Length: 360
Image (cartoon, rainbow, N blue to C red; front, side, top):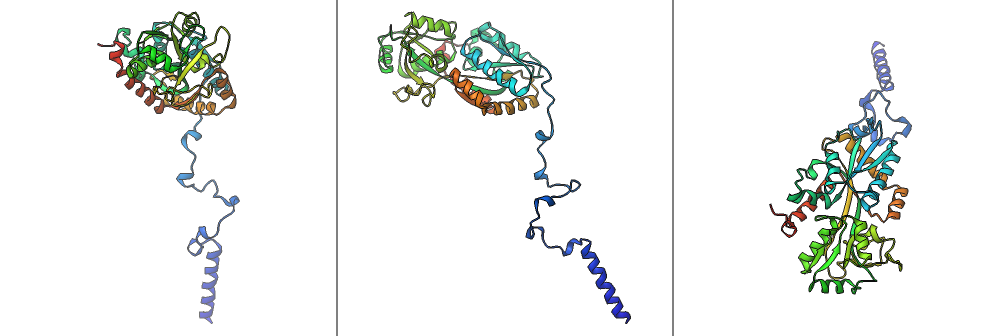
């Protein structure tokens, strides 16, 4: 009788342990999928892989006041418009006023120097163009002590390919072949919107290097001067960007131009009927790339935050429509990718320093 009582007691204790959740007798969790509502309670540690990423958990307490972007070019040109387009959408997403301050002088280096010397708190940023900035410091006669490495490369925003245009009123050349053939036998002056090392100037020198032409850079002070020189019949051609001509390249009025080619890897969406130089047998490319930069001391967390914001801006339909309205091709590069692009520009231009006469 005592033995039967002991067996019964042992059996009762075993059943009680099972009812209380003894894990050793439970079936593997994978064999019985739990409904979503039965997720582990908050007190149960979740696996590390499912924990929220640090950037999502931490809210950046910035910006607290208005931001200024230095544009080292005069108002009204393509560089200024690109800066203002970017500022408009940074303002939309950051929730503070973002203004543009045009700071001219010193072949753009007065403005660039202001950016370099700014605090790293993100309230003064800059807009730069390439290859122009690189040309500005590679030219030894300019005496610029800075390079692109003395700035924080945040994001390239605009990719604006070069085009070569002539005046239908004054030019005897109607095709790129005609123009290049003439340039091999005589000097032809091509207006540019900047000095030696600007994107327009670099393209002209590339054409001379590769095809033996005798193109002479007009090195006009700005785009407006180059446009006036072409339309007045004072130069043989003009090198500029798609955004400079896409609105009037089909005009039949006084501002009419003939676009000989667009010098990019593919045709521009803004002037899709114009062939690339490569299609016409002149495989040369050139562009003005313009992007957001900061001082070298810019807080890395602010840099990362600005990159995240610009990734949102890139997808904004209103931003895309505004860029299209201005003829601005958007091709964003972020952080290290942007810096590596600038390095490639620098490498290309270092190989042209003898041609530029930039010998030390």
